[in-house]
Image (cartoon, rainbow, N blue to C red):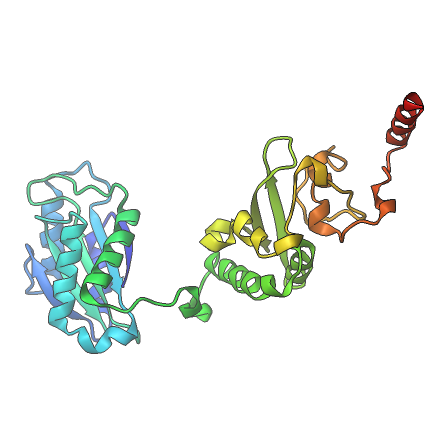
Length: 307
């Protein structure tokens, strides 16, 4: 069960859409005349006159269910679920219609309601996206509805941007993370698929706070793609090879990584140096020799003073 919420300014277009679909069925109506589509529209519009300052009085919610639940979702059950959903969402004491569509393999209904209630007050939409998610989960549990197995159930061919790119990144990271021994390998594997990895640092330190992934013109934080894709959770996948940004474990990268997001003048900063454990294999004794001549002079001077 998934709810998608929209708001609009005119009832005519919304009502014509939900009732104009082939095999659309008006399951239930409250507070509107239903002799014709025009009567329904006029009923909604008359009530909007009670609060003309509200610019978007049209509430439109599509409730979709898994095809697995189709046998149990009779018209009566659909109406029951919608009314329970509306009560949980505090959409009460107002006009509404419930229309069932048959144009998809999964059962779904459309709710069109007046955001101006029967007393002329505005039905609040505060945090409605968050509340919608919580209510859907609650009703799925209560009524024993099917819980999809996550993003694997997504029909990728139907996705549009930016969701299409986000899902492609999700699939690529999921498939490549377990084949990679360290961040560099993961970066190289993802680069072959046109995906760039960038890191976010804490101020001017080498401490990494987050990771983001880019594909084409779209960039997403790891946690936006999936909760398990935060930097800390992905970093744990590499075990002993995971990134270590502590001062005592900094190493020098032998070659710059172009995909990393840098600001001018920071190419030689501790931020990049702190990625040694990320992009290089364990160093040999020779790798511990500083590349900066000034550093060598200072070390020689220190050794001279100790003699």
